[in-house]
Image 1 (cartoon, rainbow, N blue to C red):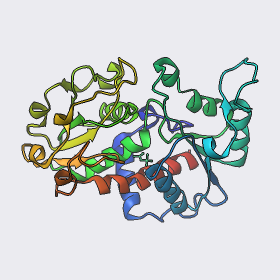
Image 2 (image 1 turned 90 degrees about the vertical axis):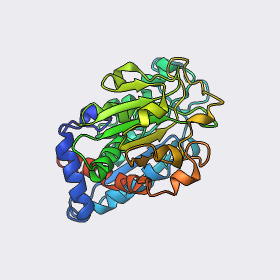
Image 3 (image 1 turned 45 degrees about the vertical axis):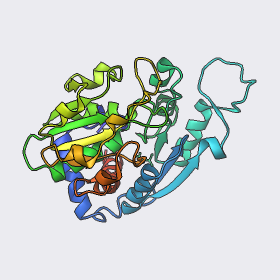
Image 4 (image 1 turned 180 degrees about the vertical axis):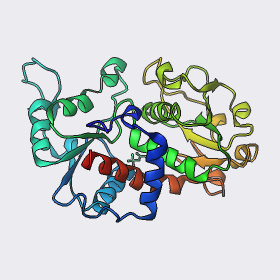
Length: 315
Ligand code: CP
């Protein structure tokens, strides 16, 4: 186990990890003493429901204490550039702040979304890497500018649990949204799928290609109907443009996922990481259908986080 959990590269044995996480789901309190006298710090630069609560629950299952800190609302604005004269808004440098938080906690989780204004700066992951450099404790990525590994690990647990054949067809499809969203979830899911035994397709409108380094093992299609044929899993997600960086694609209501579309698959299971805007991204009749395994996907976030914490506590 590496010192941090920030991407698929930090999972050394995906098959084994999925198996262990599913066992934890059956026996959540089996390591109740492992985290005694250990503190998990959860540092949020952005909002969260699932990541925040599931990771707290995971820590509690291991007997850990947690501290949650909403930096932008409750803390000093952080400077991340080096060598600057700090006479602007940021009152504290990440060098000191990360070291202080690392002194208070045994493991730190960091959520820091992209601005969607400057691709190079966003993808430099300045917060995640800054904390890795200065905190002096293991760092967990709670969704960074480019990746969301805890989500992807839970996604693969969910597919493993629900799959009916050894090598399922998994389709991740772009869907409409009312605002520009990050590429972190689709990047990350595509990255993890490079290590999972499946026929992996990505369907998106022209111009919404992701960074090719994440999608190199996927079959790409601009025809959603064609991609959905024989699909066993449909993973729905919006993202803004990677190439025309941060631009949303408007007037694409035809890409919304509906029950009628799911009925033309191989009885596919419907997935979404949540939060989802009903009747924009996914229609009510699909959300509320027997195809949906979205609640199970969210519940599995606990055990994905719990296994990652366990690995970091015992490394
Ligand atoms: N899926 C997910 O990460 O949800 P939150 O943004 O609510 O944490």
